[in-house]
Image 1 (cartoon, rainbow, N blue to C red):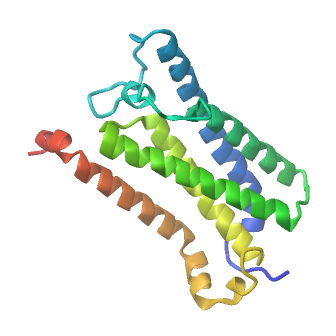
Image 2 (image 1 turned 90 degrees about the horizontal axis):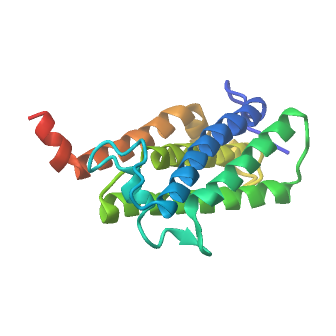
Length: 203
């Protein structure tokens, strides 16, 4: 199976990336799960990350309709990121997985990214509040999607022609630059939207 040869060997790095991303996402999801249960038990509970009218975990968590099959989003995050950690540990232990497994994992990660960004857009444009732990999950999910996709593309699992494509080689060379650029674009969009609140502190 053809692979892309780069100075950064994703084959060796992906297990540790999965473990680190999984731990970050799991911790954030556990905090969100705790706050969700606390708010459901006591409507007056104030999460520690309620800093101001904009940075308000409580405002995001208590928003109605943020469930799948009756379970709040953070519950799925706990299960998903625990699975990511398990996969990373398995790869460290030299476990081998078939093509169908990686394509299934790619599909699940892509769906997870879609769900995370749907919640992000809802937070910004509908709820008008931001949750730091939700944003951490967004960063973790984006990074997971990016490097899972590159890993599968390197190995020719997505498209056997990609590893030899000169444009793809350029993307691989600047993989981190492109990821950081995406985060900067997101940050700029968020700052622009909430400038009405934060701008007065700079003007």
